[in-house]
Every structure is written in C-alpha cells, then in structure tokens.
Length: 403
Image (cartoon, rainbow, N blue to C red; front, side, top):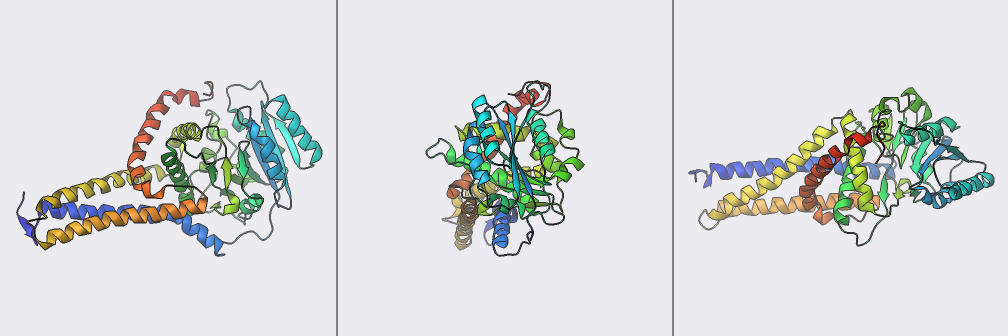
C-alpha cells in the first residue's frame, strides 16, 4: 500500500473517494436532469404554466386492427364514442379481422355517423401492412389532426381526446402520449419488466421535453395530417415492417413542433395475454429500428449505463480501500467510511424518490426501492435483446415474412 499523502489517506484511497464523488454527481445529473424532468413538466402543466389551445381542433381517431389484436375493438369503440369532445370521427383500419368483428364494426357504422371502416387489401405483399393501413386511414380522414391508437388499447378517461388535442397550438405538429400495460398481479419478473418499460418511455418523453424529440409510440400518438404528407408518409421506411411510430416521429418532429402530454386523462392502457412476452417483442422491434433513428440519445443513454456501473464499481472500490484501515487509520478514515455509506444511501433514497413520484404520476405500480438493482441488471437484458434481435434481423424487412 502507498504511503499516506493527506490526513492519513493513501493515494489509492484519495482516488477511490474522488471517483465515487464524480460518479455520484454524474448519476444525479441523469436522475434529475432526465427522468425527473418528466415529473416536473407534468406538475408545470397542472399548475397552468403550459399554454393550450383555446379552440379544440376537429380530430380523426385512427384505430389499426389486425386479426391478432382485434378482439379489443368491441370494448374500445364504445370508449372512443363516449369521449367528451366536440367534433371527431373514428376510422377503424380493418386488416384481416374476423367476419364477426367486421359485422360488429358495421353495426357501429350504422348507429353512429362518425364511425367509418376501411380495409387493407388482402393481396398486398412485400409491404408493411400496418403502414399501408395507417396511410389508408389518414387519407380517409376528414380532419387535419390525427390521433392514433390500437385495437388492444383503452383510454382511461373520457377526456383523452381533449387532453391530447389541446396541445395543438400554432406551431405544434406532433404530440406524444404515454401508454402503460395493464397490470398483471403476480407475474414473474413483473417488477423488472415494468421498470424497463417505464425507463424506455421516460427517455423519449424527457428528450421531447428537452426539445430533442426522437420517437413516440403508436398506441398514443397524435400529429397533423399535413405534417404526415409533407414528410411523404412512410416513404423513407417502406423497406421495413416496423417504424410506423418511432421512425415516423423521428422524421417529422423537431425542437419546435413537438409536445408531450402527461395528464392522467391522456394515459392509454394496453392489454395483452402476457405482458412480458408482448414487451419482449416490442423491445426487439424498437432495438432493431433504433439503428435508423437520427438522435444523440443512443450515445447519451449508453454513457448513462456505463456511469451507473462505474458508480457501483467506485462504491465497492472505496469500501475496499477503507475497510482494512478502519481500526488503525484514525478518525479521518472513519469519517470517510461514513461519507461513503451516506452517499450510497443518499443515492438509493433519491433514486427511490424520483421513480416513485414518476410511477405514481403515470399510474404504474413500480417497485422504486429496487430501481438501483434494476439499473445494474438492465444492460444485460439489453445485450440479450441485441443478440436475439440479430438472428431475427432479416425478418424485419418487407421482403421477408413478418415474424
């Protein structure tokens, strides 16, 4: 061990304490500069510090329904039609749903004059059927503001449309909402997967708040029809099955024309037979399309992962340097050990505070006390998705059958 250089501390002990302090500050910058920003923005909106449209625009709601997820339509349509909104229409994009469901939608068309159904041709190959369906729905839409959701989703409030559409003040073309998965009590791995989903959403929402939007999700998304066609629709990603939401938003959005909506009324809930399997599939989809995103977020969040790991390594290093000298190093070593323990405890408490507040705001049952542990594990899961995704890469292109 090196000789003492200050108050009985060795060079390695000073280095260990300095690294611990640096990484503590960096992780707090991420925690409060990125993730807590979503909570702060929502509170500002609640306190009247965000300006909204005085006159609500006419809206066209587009619901893409394929054969796998169309069963939820019979529950979704009544919720959409019950929205407290002055002028809107609902367009169901039918992509191979059963004849029974098709007839049920037709019954809604007969009963309501603002419900319409359009069809994706069955004889379409080597193209993303979802992108084609959404394009057909937008072309059929009578209104400039398009709000998208999916057949397996439900708005949790009859003011959902009002909450999303109020953001279309002059200059705003894209509005990003939040979608949560319906809770599965007792599901294995539920805590970590919930954290993973929420972190994924907090990243793109916080970046949009910071005027650096880079993606959104198609289950709760709104944009102007004119903006969609000015972008030439999905022309830039016609070779991909996916990208109807994240890549489209990445192309259309900029620092001036994008907003997020985080009120309780704006939240949409999605329903799956197995949330874990559904999220794994979505995660691989977004991992694949991430390579086409024009954004600095990938570098920023890779660095975040590195800094989190370095923080815990620095914590272990500092403890390893101090513990052997607790009995013989005198009061400076004891004080330093107390400071190290306090920093670790403070980091845990602050992380719990941020995630518990954000989760409560979004209505998510996040196990915030375990978040520091989840942050260590998450990169390993990301690596797993990256490895598995490589084997499925070719299936994501339209010249291959979608998996």
